[in-house]
Length: 121
Image 1 (cartoon, rainbow, N blue to C red):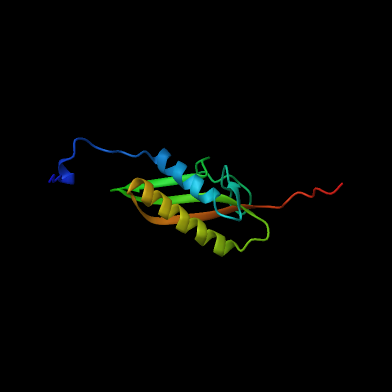
Image 2 (cartoon, rainbow, N blue to C red):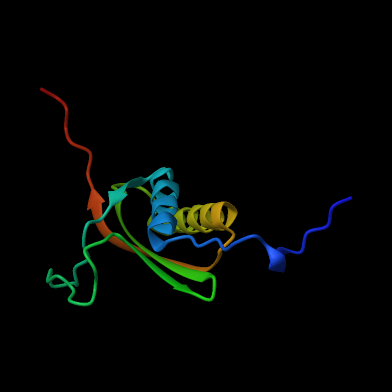
């Protein structure tokens, strides 16, 4: 019978913010009603926010606890609060299950609404 103490592992495991962001991206895009991730954030006047990065996903990682921020474009006609809750749940579950990193918050910013294009001739 073998006994292993996790504190005496053979090495360390580090998971980059980019890996967490990739997991969050795919989890968010799987949610019905999500069109895409936004490439940037704007304020109400349409100016690019100076403190925001050009990335649609922000990861704040401290002491193996993550806060994730996503900027998403939602399809027109969906219930935005319900869709946001689904994104939060899916992202939190996916990141925690795949990485073992606790996710304390998933902040959703609705950056835009995408209307379906008319395909009639």
